Image (cartoon, rainbow, N blue to C red; front, side, top):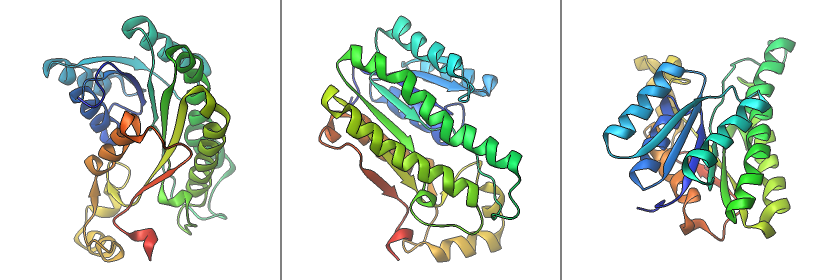
Length: 249
């Protein structure tokens, strides 16, 4: 029960990595507010957590909406009494180089992947201050650490998340609010399925990973759990890389 008595808000929690994080947090004792725009799937995760004896509440959150972020934080405080943990997990992927990226696609991915993290952080900090501190975990990517010719805008957003994390960490450290970023490598999720669900694609990607296999959402969720827990109490502004060794090459 590494999160016993804590309250967490997870964006993009209706499926994939966010859903795995929500269920893991609940199993470790946290009360979880699940934010997403996929209402049916979000309510399903809420029900699954409740069936297993945990506490969870689903709320509709478009991460580009400041008012919906504020509503989600208020739900956490009103229902569970406080907010200790925020996981900025929601994001999208657009595969295109610089010349092939439209202005509309650039704005859309920046709004969701960049502005969404900013708005979530801004909404959560006052509640964490009232709670006496907290932990913010921003899901970046190894694309935020190195350039990618296949996803220029995505890499730009994940780089922005990395530096916003550090700025947040420095600004709020004295208030007991920590902020760290997680940098997954190749993880089998809904976002990556289209490139991995062929024998050729899987072989190609496996060859790029020194550990020889493709990660799953649980690999990332365990790292997020560590950063959410008091076990990482002396960490802030750090980058937790979970990539099977890709960036070590």
